[in-house]
Length: 295
Image (cartoon, rainbow, N blue to C red; front, side):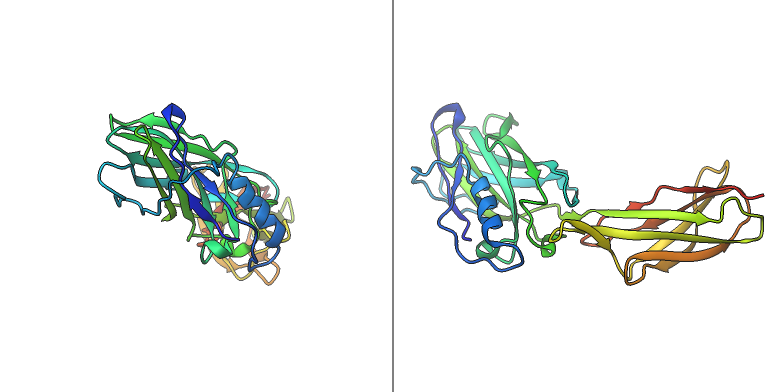
């Protein structure tokens, strides 16, 4: 699927740059095909196919003297976004731009893949007409709310992590426009994680052995289920009843199915939990604590 820019400069206060998409082409990667075509079509809603102004300027580069330019793009305020298997996730994408006449409108979406012909994810806003806030007479920041649906917008686990790109475009009051196709996103999109803890037996006599089990799983965007995250380092932490903080007892690794299991000696009433620090593709997660009565 080719994602091609058509930057449309519309008149008045509703000037809005938009995206035109050609016919579907072959896409690499699992479950791409029609799903990707649908996602790109979603990203193209509201496009002005009559527009004949084209731009391929990069962030910070002026297309021509006196024209609009994009100076900054930001995804979720620079913080990574965690997406699960079914629940839609909303976050902001902002575009800051400048023009001598001022900025009338702007919009954006984000995509991931080796190039625009082989995208494995396209995350677009429901409403392409961004909300623009004036910074000064020549500069505005326009923001859209992206809605990420893991069942419709992400087609491969390879999209997890960094490497996301912003497709943004703006329209100025003087009718000029500017756009970027592949500005580097300042945040990644990660596969959501889950972590559990269970200490047994409960209650337990002081000095006896406690077995602490659990499981580390993460979203699989291709099957839309959570699956074990294998061979990952996870900390077992303990907080004595009445204490204010946890201490780390040991670090273990999840097995080939993501399961966790270790033993400790029971010393006093307290709380046990597992803590995962996260990776480049999966966010940090802390389990709900399990209280153990020691007598």
